[in-house]
Length: 395
Image 1 (cartoon, helix red, strand yellow):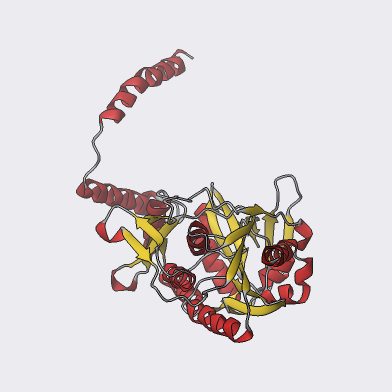
Image 2 (image 1 turned 180 degrees about the vertical axis):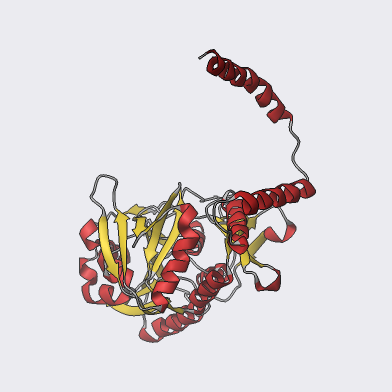
């Protein structure tokens, strides 16, 4: 008993000294960090109970290093990098869920239009709890991505468990893989010279599609536009800037701010407008993020559009893909924050609509695709409110 007590006293007595020493420790040099990592790797390979996959350890170390910075910085294996390239090209084979790590949880930004996830009723804000046998955590995200990719290649259905509102029972959905063409923009007429354009993401084709819609609107004599950015998780920065330029004849679109010189840039509109003399309402909600917020923020700050709906997601950072040597993947690193033309940094805040319009839970699946909107748009309370507001403003 006395020996145990003495040991505890010894621990307690040394804590203040250790804490003091810790405060005085200088930032380790690059060489010291490399030596520490090498030493830990040697110890693991020698003492660990099972044989060790060195490549897996290295990838885990890289991922841990980067995810400690913020939820959007990470290491991308070559396989994961190819998935991202596919999405930016506008097509891939999979299940259709866009996710982000938020406050220690994997949160659904939005299900992609026409995907298995959208058809199953997955909603923005859902928390991903489990995929088959894998518990979904930030630490298991890379494992999840590889598992989901392998499952899609095997045409395997996935059982996905979601948390929707902390008091509700878990939501379990079965998802089948399918070819997903990210037809990122859709257009149709609502009537009374009011047009509707939905942008579901920003990829390499989006700006070209929207420019075509602008020409169609002029040919049809449309005077007003509902631009639907709900459940749009973002995408390519340049695509959002190009589309904002179509609505503006001058002025700042967005500015980026970072530590290195090239991360600090101002993006201005040219003097050529495609959507001139068109009154615009933009719909946003909690699933509108990143590039969608760049577009919405630019048009709002220049009084070029009225924003309706709900507070947007609040992803106000820019990530750069930096390839590693020898085709060992890439790092996705947050290199800048962006500000709207008025100088507002919206990260973790979002953009507040000019007019708040709530939507019932039961109608959320009906705002996922332009086809659903075309068939049932009068039942979509936010879309109908935008249409009605434009008609009243005309009067």
